[in-house]
Image (cartoon, rainbow, N blue to C red; front, side, top):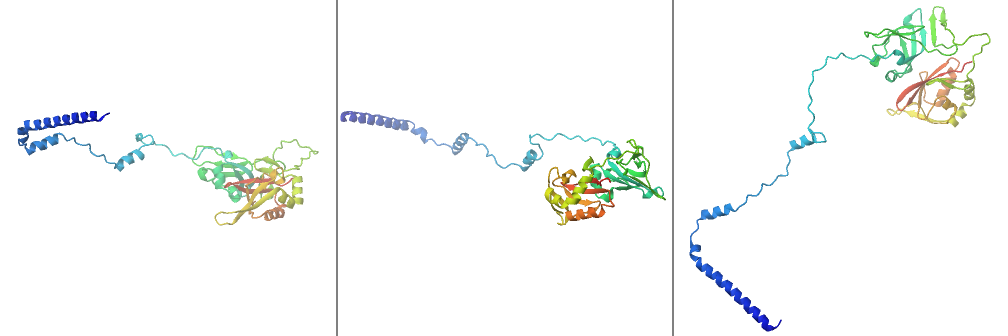
Length: 341
């Protein structure tokens, strides 16, 4: 672009600006009288107010705590109000008594001692198979029943009415139930589990044998320890002889144990078994890892040597050994019968 063209464009722009300026001046002069008119102040205010748009009110971020309680406490997780609870008239229900369970399902009569001259002195030694009664009577001395004694717990209305050679008779108080007779276990051999005591001494009741008798019949001898029923063992003659001769080696080789202490006062409450060799003599007698041996025939056990010494001292006068165990906080018993001669 040359200088002449630049000058031409500059002159044209100046003329255009001058024309616009003249137009504005001419418009001002034409409207001068109107602009000089007085405008009332109230009109100005009204004009301004008409053009003002009211802003929306500022929303508060504060939430009423009652609304929070309704949503988070009075409603469930779905946000729905709880269902209306309709009050119903109370039913005239009669109080329920203890479960009508047969007594034979609650306990087993292990032995009966009958005194014909004084029935009040008769007693029965039982094993509770009901878990609630077993926890209630967890001491061996609490497992003897006498005439007039109740089972306790929810079965408090069940009482012993008679103890006879045929079994223990239980009555049910005000319940509409007939008395129930629970016989004692029938043990093999001469140990029947029933002893009748009279003025002339011990009387053994006569029972029919299931095995035909003959002069040449010889009862087989149990040579190895075996479990005759759950937690009841018959100790074999060979097993007893081997343990008596080598008990020290058997205890050190096949069994690991340690004192079990009461967490409340730190006293020794028994012997805790930590390991049992499979197929060993301790395993044949039902011992498993984690069990605690607490007592033998009511005699508290605090060491293995003490337990062995107690058994040796009473071996000639005791045929049945009732051992109290504990595992995972639950007590139970195992019964061991001495070898038959």
